[in-house]
Image (tube, rainbow, N blue to C red; front, side):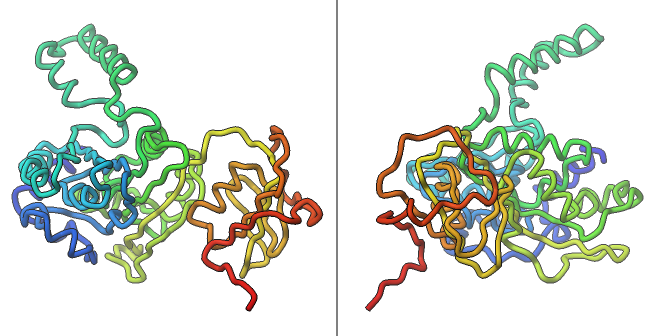
Length: 371
């Protein structure tokens, strides 16, 4: 699908509000209170990924549009955090930057910047490329080769968004606008820029069935966030392929936003975590899965039967007891940790009770004590 159709549709949206581009969303009104009315009015989305922002985060907003989610996130990251908005539409970037100084004054510091880039190629600084092209116009094959060489060098030496530099990647109804042939590259780029152990929260539109080509060829449906939507299982598969773990449909709209030719399109928020890159080391740790299911399996193939002391490496131990699943697992730190061994427990490896006596237990919110 033509990128020009998307740019044109959102340029119109920067000039005058386009109701067809919005899903109803319940935003935090206390965060909206600080924002200029125009930023709110000309924002288009289907969810609220700002809910996942933590104090001190470096946040990257893909397809930042009017800047609404960026300015909401800036209130949550605090003075030690910062927010980067990426967009390709000049009119939207102009709108977002229009209020940058005003918002810096209201926030007590300039924590937000907006950059021009393609979300499927987060290393390429498009502003820098356009500046280079103004002095080196492409008129023949040799010029084109020079441009490609400049792009390769720029992405290596001065990437727009460096590797492993972001605590949280968010997006609000934008990934569906990327051409299908570039969607997997897009997800890989998200993985590249996120720090090990960091997170993503992507609000977007999904379909319950695969979308036929005649709908994908409709520029009105594509630029309207419909026919470029991920199919539900397809979205999960792409994030798994990129290397993400703990992928969840955290928010899910019960009612479809639109139904086209009996295909339901609804909004959701997908969350996921980039695993730590550290080596698997065994120091005697274990976890117990609380239930209520008979067992669960993680994305690395480890099985956790309910109520069993399961051997885990230190990396998996931290992931299960400090991350989003900490209330589902009891962590057992050995009373005396042995010298770390390079080892990752095979699925089904138990930790005998004799090895866990006198251990420290991390039991999340469900800790109980006897009377």
